[in-house]
Image (cartoon, rainbow, N blue to C red; front, side, top):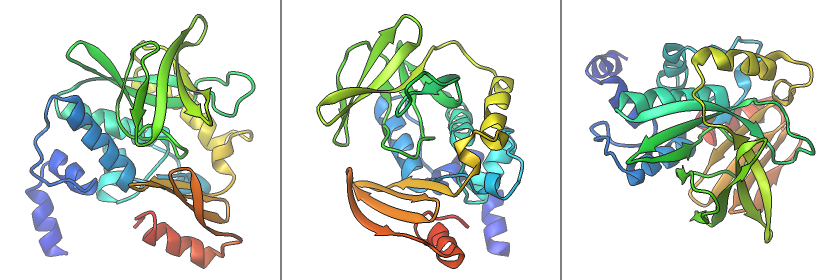
Length: 263
């Protein structure tokens, strides 16, 4: 314990973050899309999407210091308002031009819902890029350039941005040969206070899907692992390769640690 504390004293905020996401402590932030992709993929491979604090009745803090202590120092995860807030703060610490926006999550919705998803926009060399580490489903794991109609492929998935008169930017993914709407957003900067109400809705509202049962997800190199209620699944690309149902509390706790890295 004394050795760990001693080491932490000599680790900068960024170096500790890099170690948390599996990169060398002395990683140098490069002003390139490739480096942004390295950071984004490292985040989704090591930081789980999870709602355990909400289920435990612990209030969610969106303060940057609290998020750092929870996710980096405490080796936990969070949901979009936590994970993408941390990403925003860390990218700003690296010197990137970054802002956060509110988005509508359209996948699986018959009508556009209100804006209850946080995303990050990075401006680099005159172009804007979407970065998002706060989705438990199939989602981009590398930055996407905001360019209307441009086909962008990554990790066996295909995406494009389209424009809508009412919704603004609409990100679509190609699913079984058909384009489906994923999220929509406009690019005006949101201040931290703007995320308070939608986050609290997700945390406390009776209709929120986030306060009912365990929801966990983490990406793997070729797929993802998820817990939905008392069901654990492993996917390779989009193919289900392993499933456990009717999990006991003890088995859930074990999976939180062994498969999602929650301490």
